Length: 181
Image 1 (cartoon, rainbow, N blue to C red):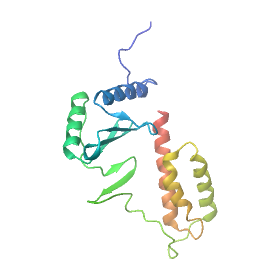
Image 2: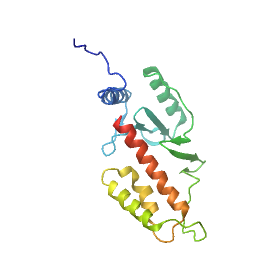
Image 3: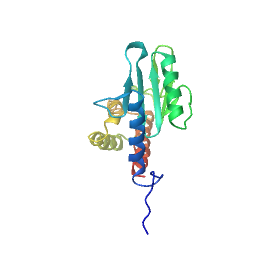
């Protein structure tokens, strides 16, 4: 017996693609345009009324210069999908985000510098991990900034530097597990 599904179900191979096609169609219908160089970014409008949308699977980050335009978009999406507004961004994809009046910082607790007083870490192991991460950059450009940052501390590194590398590895592991399911 063969059954034909009317819509994709979770945990089927087709579900992520079906979701992406549906979301993309809905965003286009609402007047958003997909970025040519980054397919996970959509935009609508100009100047202060410009809306920028970042998509990661079923998580959306909405940003814009006009709070009213952002609210209008949220209402449009709520009428299209069952969703909830979690408020200001504070944590996303394993990254802590701190928003100030004039700037945004990510992972504000992590400050890497040439700390000569900290507890020393195994430099050989650290270098091996950095080499592996730099190789991974060929297929994972999302790691460029963080791997570039930890690569600066190959000499006289401390446990703080090593912990930052472990955080990157946890991020990679989490996204690989998510992508493979």
